[in-house]
Length: 441
Image (cartoon, rainbow, N blue to C red; front, side, top):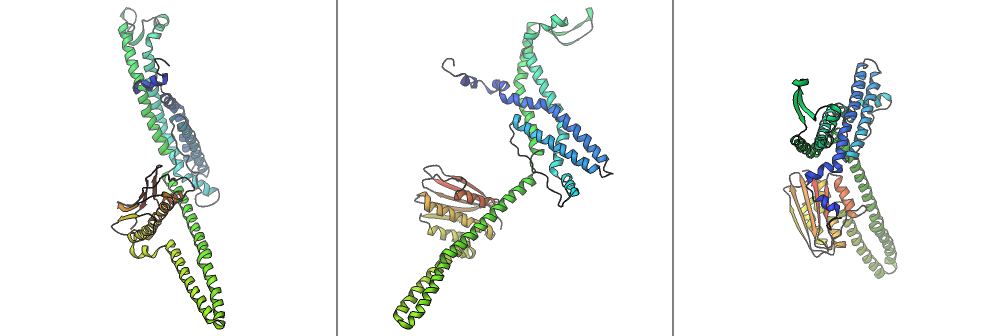
């Protein structure tokens, strides 16, 4: 600490251009570029040698295993390159999924799967392309580094030339010998000042040259050594399918529980009451009539429970009159005044319409139970090929998408159909929930 200012703060007051040559990022990326040459040579030699050998042996069965071995080696090189990129370039990239079988069993199916894998061949392409790029990036990085720092510090080591080389300084150009010898040697104060200026410019340019070439490496690694878009999409679809299956199973269990504990139990009790009323009608008609009247009331309650259950599965108003009327009906049952605005040019497919309905229904239920709001609003509109939902309230806020919450489950269900849920709910409110669904008319 000097003059009351910490060293760290004084360092950060330097312009970025002056700090860049000494930043850790510059040295990490420079180390990456210097390693490009040996890694490029190793990958190129392996790929060219083994692929050529395998292709030459394809007239025999031996060629197929050799090609698979070649691709396996390329995958190993890719694994090293991803680790190197994570450590030095701070590039977060996932490992590609293992190669799946070729649609059958046995050695031939496995060989076919390996040879037909686009991921394997992308690794081979990387090994072939990385060699020329490695030579170029290594050469440029070494040239800028050595010339820059060498010229910048030249006044400190110029004494080497007159002592050990018998010449006044570093020779820029020259020819002849003896009395005819002529040229330019950096030895005058003006020469040394010029070398320092040129060296400083090269040193200041070095970080930006290094970062530019490192960005090319990031593109190569992420584009050729990461998971393929198809594999990523397959993984997403498998995850979404699991969510859909789990949601469907949970809904079936809920319907079964509601039927068992609600309408079914009430109907069983109703059957018993009617049996008792039947017996009483013969003994005491007035008591029997009262019991039948009570049973009639139970029938009405059971019918209402069945209607509520059916509405929870898929409301008739949604099927008959569309999303506008269905959301208005949901808003009318909310304990908070809700304004509903639906501007859709047409009706989407029933599946998307149903998801939109239940999304808004669940959000309004959360507002009724947890928000403490005095008003809420629901807006639905279409933007190109997406349906947009926006639900807001002026409540206490603090809602969360943390795992295990109802909103997290809602986000998963939307994700299963390529939808998106975004939550903005600071403490003190207001809470805004935006959702996107694909428009499929």
